[in-house]
Image (cartoon, rainbow, N blue to C red; front, side):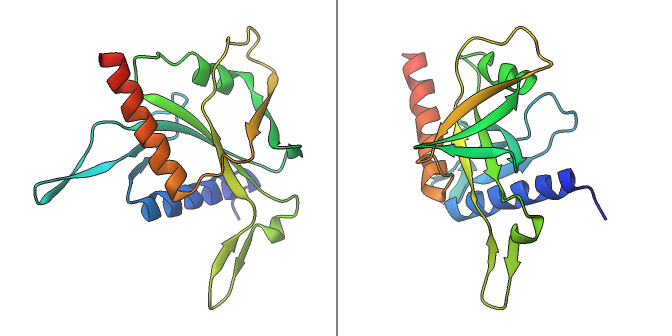
Length: 173
């Protein structure tokens, strides 16, 4: 049996595959070498009778955790500072990057329910674009707060990609 960490990673990947597929977005998960980002969402446009990638992708860092809590209208999570720094020090002229956090219940038996009519994963993924100053000591954690309205849905993903396109257009003008 694989480790619980690998189970969580598999579930988070499954979640974003379902969201990207529902949104009609090309998804690349994994890199030959891991340098802080887990994958890329690549929007597809129609050019004539062909479908092609638009050229406005968004990279993502994907996390899955049981260690989260609701604080009023936000989700609280203690992110490793090395991961936080990877996200906040991203070159603003480069490809945008988003943190995706799958929050699962404490009990692993409640993570996935399967029956003849459906497969259901408990809880959801939240997303955020982090900004701020990097943390000097990367061997610690930093508490971040994500708005609970930032649930990763197909429409939210399409919105993130549209925002990236607009951000790049503003930078070019």
